[in-house]
Length: 96
Image (cartoon, rainbow, N blue to C red; front, side):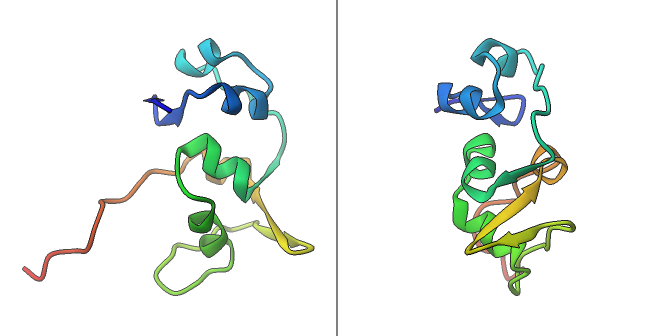
């Protein structure tokens, strides 16, 4: 999976979003729904689903997602949170 404009450009992402891979590459991402699952959020951003589950549950050390809701055992994430997600620095902060 390669990344462009902050989003994964994998054919599976295009299926989730209901658009072409070329549209994703061009930055023409169309909002399909107000909420996505943690699996879809991970696929769109190229991250792990556990990151999104931790953020939805507001676990210590993770920024909570306003508007996230639990449906059964799964979480629904607002698409706005997925669209505005930026990856933080990798690894542990230095003791500097």
